[in-house]
Image 1 (cartoon, protein in one colour):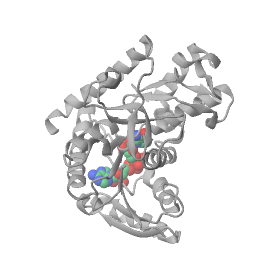
Image 2 (tube, protein in one colour):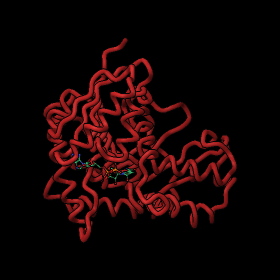
Image 3 (tube, rainbow, N blue to C red):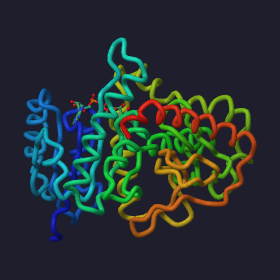
Length: 325
Ligand code: NAX
């Protein structure tokens, strides 16, 4: 048996974690020969609920689950961890402005960034799911000067998967027949799901589906998908978010398949003219744990306009919390 890897999950008593933890413990992330230790972080008022989740984890008698540690202290939760799923965040409360939401999450993610900096494994991979995910990731990485900025990504894999699914449904093929979709920008309703480079069974997607459907239906459907799920279910996406979190971290750890890319939000290096220093979703490939932004894609005027809209929103989010960076 391999040595256990240490995995932190924050917001561990929340609904995404309830879908995530059991699948991590079952081996869906790193495989069925990789034991894990789980470090679960919550706020004090949620510790009782978290203990209930741990009882259930233990009741599964998972062969791969070596140890479970629960805590409300980030310095304990991130001690030597190899992977950190930052799921927990403050939801928007009644009467809360967007700026207030950004600020109180900025506080949470600056504390967690500092703790990661101090106590995590220097190669820790940090995936931010908690919203506003891109800007939360920016704050965490800014508070972790001893870690490489490429150790931080925010999650746009759910948006990526949603786009694959809608394109597969529209063209009557399986999700595995779809390749090379892209989510550009922010995990918000300004994101730009782009299928100009997408392939359906190897053929250009836009030769097979109508351009008007892409513009008038697909783009808004993906931008609004989170709200559509809430309307139907009465709660936000949880199992699909957990699936996306496992997929993003797994591909980051083990590499992307040949001939395809995925979308991840990471620190912009200026690729495609996007402002450096924003956490922006790009098409990426991963090899040996290193993420590379796919270069050289043709960007038409429509795409450029939409990429700039979501860049502007991220710029404004960064401005709103600038004093905390
Ligand atoms: P829940 O409200 O069910 O759970 C969040 C948990 O985080 C709670 O148990 C809370 O006590 C905990 N928490 C709050 N502050 C914390 C802190 N400082 N340290 C540790 N734990 C803390 O939310 P859930 O549905 O699980 O969603 C979690 C986050 O994911 C939300 O911010 C949500 O908006 C975001 N999402 C992001 C998605 C993405 O694609 N990036 C999609 C799904 C989801 O909407």
